[in-house]
Length: 89
Image (cartoon, rainbow, N blue to C red; front, top):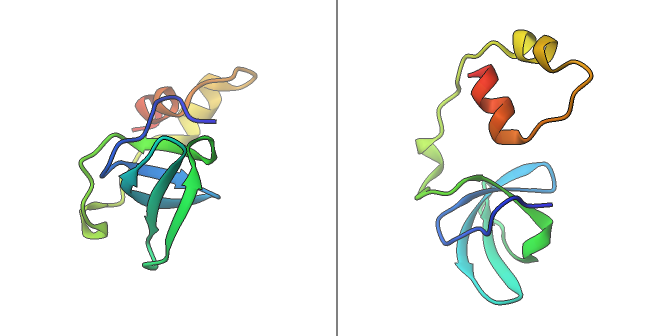
């Protein structure tokens, strides 16, 4: 599911919600969700959104983009999350 290996302080997607990687191990990652819940999850269960460093939630700011235009350009095609973000924002 993930395109690259997450490292400590990466921003990842876990079960359709953002989380911060707090520690990495050979089989599991320790993550912290926005609500403060801490979990130990498998590497394959997360997708890296940003390699980091990401240290606190106040760093995230809403972005304005051209989502409709990106959707129209990609209609019928598949893409990766980084490519979609580059087109939309």
